Length: 459
Image (cartoon, rainbow, N blue to C red; front, side, top):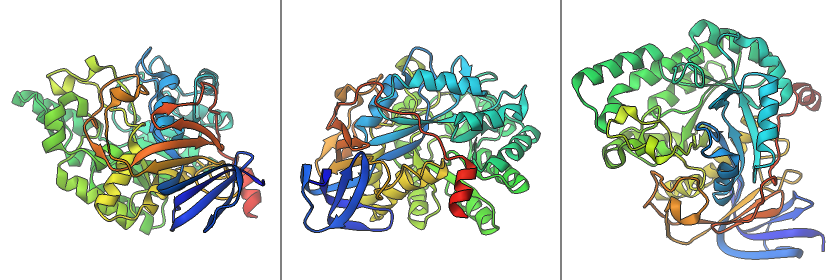
């Protein structure tokens, strides 16, 4: 028998869907993708109508935002259960901003023994140091850089003002990596927050009023214009507004590298129903918008204007999400366990081809972080990272699976027509249904190919 594993079902590729297709695995890599009678293998599963997709790459995870809370032991467990085989972790760790080669190494050494799926890392800068350490972080293996036009916390999540952002983009440009930026104009947000506080509104409405659309759109122009000026690939790490994707498209039309990521919460939750019902548990920056905007974002998916779909996952303890004063709550929600089935549900409901699932949660993230030499596709020679979804109705409950450090989720109670039934990392089954099989330490640190290797391969 030539193959270690063969899975037969509906194989979802970025450009086509193979009904009664199969994926064959050998030595941890994809060996063959085909149609018709599947070949023999040491382990063979005929999965009927089940969907077989490349393992998801979650481009935005915060495993260490709250000290002694989630950590990689839990974030990667949620990931494995949700069909996510690589997480890209953000650099804003409480107590240790990832802004030097030494900090990158510390994080790799910390995460490695815990990780159940593979992980890549973002780097950032200390505003007091400027871009001096960008090159050393590239050599340490970061997959991209992250900055913010808004200051959430002066130490953990600092604002990078325009002149410094320009200097950072200029330093990143020669490396070929991407500069990702949180898109909220600091001065505008602070002005609107003061207006909301003066009005006396403190319930669920306060958050959206404190960050109206103009606060996002002003920042996006700053980000993309900085990219245009420095010839650095510019990426907005989350956008809740259809207009934002139009802005990015106009920059691409002018020949600049300008991309936008859409988080699963912007494709799922809305302000007038979910934020009203959940309060602080649906507080996210930028805010969840009205239902009309949610549907506009799905149209942007169908039109090809969305580059990535991610979670912006963070598992705040419940006491940091339940303050009746909306603005006093921490921002962000967990989503790793449920991103893939939520996207599949949303796409099917709107008649959007599932090829977008393979593209936006696997192929494009792999390209974005320069991991596509080993990740992101069911292509011979790449890692056999695979997620299987079966057509089985389930109602999501974050506490029921045991795979989350917190028992709450803004997605609790949502009916999912497709459920993750198996996840494979390099050909090994790491989750079966809700049961995570991978032990801590199964995951590996993955890093981009050095630029000179890419140049030699293209020559």
